[in-house]
Image (cartoon, rainbow, N blue to C red; front, side, top):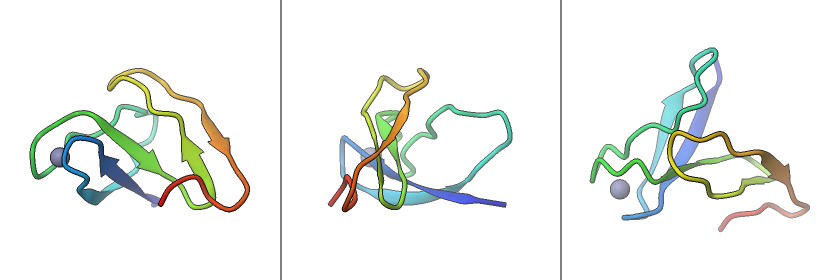
Length: 66
Ligand SMILES: [Zn+2]
């Protein structure tokens, strides 16, 4: 089962969530409960979108996050 890493855009906390089949919704931050989280993918960046909306992952050379 894949585990995805997320980053909270409010407090910067990074956390991991098990990917659930058919669920694209961003999980809430475990620290501040913000839903402004984005999925981190290795060597890929996800364009920030509003929570609950689908965002299209786009791969960028060299990684898209720091
Ligand atoms: Zn947070």
